[in-house]
Image 1: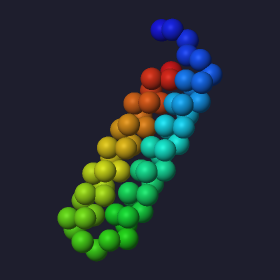
Image 2 (image 1 turned 90 degrees about the vertical axis):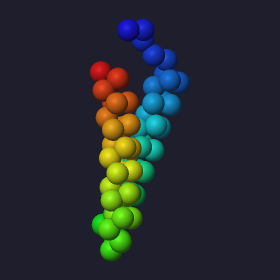
Image 3 (image 1 turned 135 degrees about the vertical axis):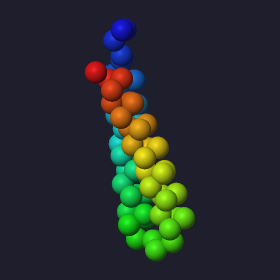
Image 4 (image 1 turned 180 degrees about the vertical axis):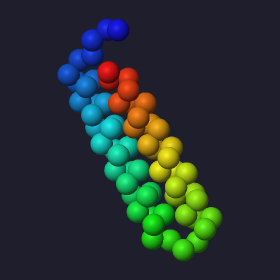
Length: 61
């Protein structure tokens, strides 16, 4: 695998931070709502962003 530049590494780091923040927000929203459908949607979205985070992180190894 080709090495990445510091600019690319910085961009990936920013993406990891954004995915982590969005995931945390959706989990918080899910915990706060009483609406079952909305809770399921928030949990699904949190899972999607967690997978994005995991994939980005895995590709750095």
